[in-house]
Length: 79
Image 1 (cartoon, rainbow, N blue to C red):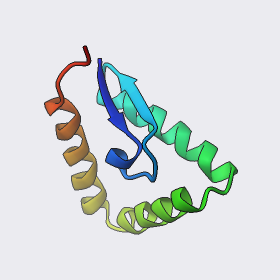
Image 2: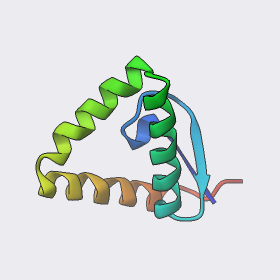
Image 3: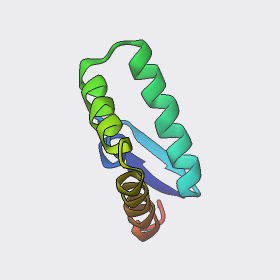
Image 4: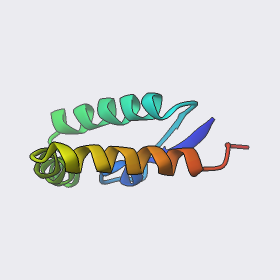
C-alpha cells in the first residue's frame, strides 16, 4: 500500500489517500474532489479550474496523468 495526498494529485489539501494501485488512488482523489466541489471549497475549486485548463489539451492531460502514475510507483510502500 502507498500514500499520496490531495496536493500531490493536483488538489488543494493534505488529505491522504492509501491504495495498492494508482487507479485506486485516482478514484479516491476524484471522489474527494467531488465532495469538495459540492461543499464549494474555494481552494479545491481553484485547483479544479487549473485541471480543467490542463484537460483542454489531451496530450498535456495524458502526460500529467502518466507523471503522477510514475510518482506513485516510485513511492515506498507504507509501513
